[in-house]
Amino acid sequence: MENKILQMKEQFEKELSEIKDLSELEGIRVSYLGKKGSVTDLLKGMRELSNEDKKAFGQKVNELKNSVAQRITEKTTQLKELQIQKEIELMPEFDLSVPVKLSRGSYHPITLVQRQCEQIFKSMGFTVEDYSEVVTDY
Image (cartoon, rainbow, N blue to C red; front, side, top):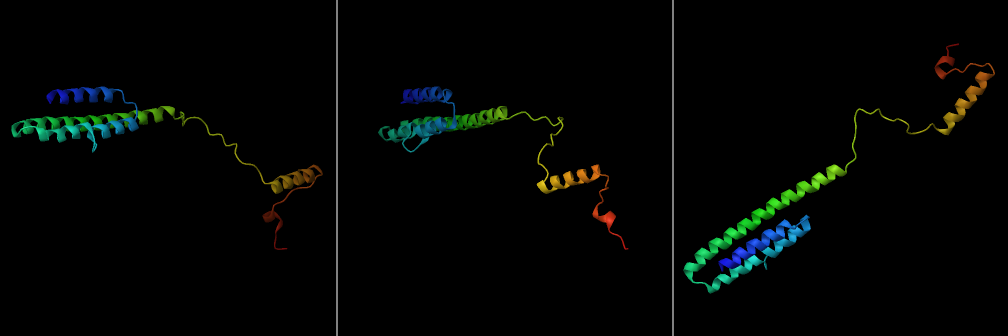
């Protein structure tokens, strides 16, 4: 029975080292720690053992279960950090010291026509006055 535990631990470490993303990690977590997982099968196999062997075997299986859970948690944090690092590397660089380009928007067509008319009248010798300059008390 101890050989099964060692083989399972070696197999788990091998599979864990080949994982590249979180979905694969979740699949391994289910295959080892799930309801029908390998570690659960080991615990179900304890029925055949004597009472003295059950205690020792149970401790080793629980150690394996805790080890697997801990390694999966570590690998999850590692994969999340790698994913965040990849997103950071894909972001375009932004330089705050570069002057801003304010070439957005345009004038309303009525404003453009008004300016053309003003330019025509200025060329004929007229002056263009705004509302506040024209309004007087007299």
